[in-house]
Length: 296
Length: 311
Image 1 (cartoon, chains in turn yellow, brown):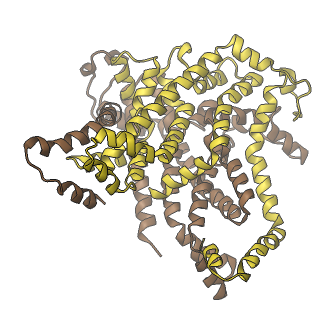
Image 2 (cartoon, rainbow over the protein chains, first blue to last red; image 1 turned 180 degrees about the vertical axis):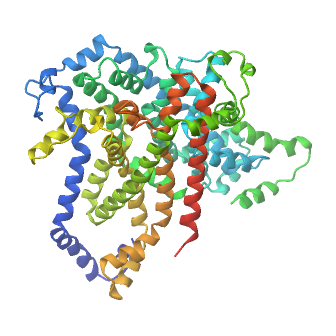
Image 3 (spheres, each protein chain N blue to C red; image 1 turned 90 degrees about the horizontal axis):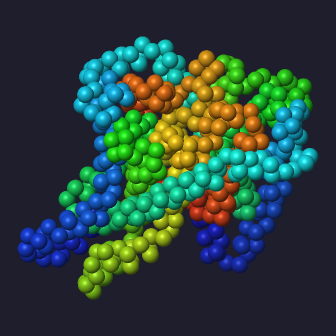
């Protein structure tokens, strides 16, 4: 950063110099790129393998040594997934649950984030301390009491049992509060002087200014909601209510244990939506992670 | 920062009780949905779990909660005497003790490597390395179970190429937990890398130049300048990674079912089994609370250790 700045301020000859440097550095560091590429292969390889295996025949899947390129690619594994098993339903369940959780967090976390960042009221700092205090609580702790509560509320084996407990997560509250604190008070004060109420200020000024934080919140909420296993596994007991991870985990342990074609196709269905979203928004992903991490 | 907000509020003259009460009501109105969800589904259950852990709560008490029998510390003493719990605690500890340093080290190595790479290449590698972090552990565990298959798996086929006879990784007591540690590191180092990379890029380059002028080599610079400046990132990642790893569940659940011979059974898995296969709600709560205390204590310890000896 600072070298760039000095280069920009300095008289003409310097920028030429800095432009030359990278090329020499690249030539001297070829081994670094080889190493990075090998690492990349180890990370991306298994996903590539999953795709290729999902279009192989059962006979080819159980062959030693294994083949990389499918001999006679077919979609029969996917056919079984969608016709014989209820994967369209699981996909819809996952989409509905993760979508509702994300929507609820966007609304509730930005509301409380605004209150914690910009409004003065009794008990405000206590709320924030409680939020911080629960960031590290493991899911296993609330597992049993939540199940007991849900059975009392008659919500066991409904999507609401999965949605409600995480409808406003402490991490989201923390994220929104930190971001909204950066909004200048003068801006809100000017609106108040003009006679705008808090609801109007919130929806017309604060929310439009918080779009980057909302995008980050959407990402960090949707992912764990889409991928979650433990609590949905406990509370979604009927097969028609399974989410994709629950269905895949149960099939992988049970009747389809050795049916690798089916399991690979199931993994593709579970993983591909996330990969697509990730590749579209990847800059935002890694940046939002770095931000929440370093500010905390 | 709260001082500023206070100042602007007090500039408005306050007259009636209503106008004094009003900002509090507005604040609570905005906070209400979160506070309700937080109290009912998070704070309440955290306390309830503690109470449950002193009872013999089981499926018969689901309708009438107060009919559960009070057993005092029995669940806790049972847990420490339970061979299965001790095994699960030991496995989880091994997973954390090896997994956390390895994840941090690999994340740091990848970040340092990427920090040397040029702009476009850096973005490309960062996306690739981060990919497993965003994907479902269930899917990853299913894929790796196939990759590690003794006969049809890619790993042993690769080993056979170089003349090695790979074991049945997930079915042997001496390799199953190690395989799961390796999988954890493989999946999570990308997260640590992104945090380290952001921290590395925040370091003032003139520090490096000054050190170079003073004749410091690359290794000295890394040890004396880079590492100390990375301390906040290390602290953050140590806390986050440890608390995540202590909750190990999906990998053994999908890959080994806790076996062979409980050699990959984790504490979270035991909570699940005791609670929802054997329906010992009280006992499961006690185990979960022990895990909670360990996670909190470890986070506290890491803060003390890494904060106190600042350079």
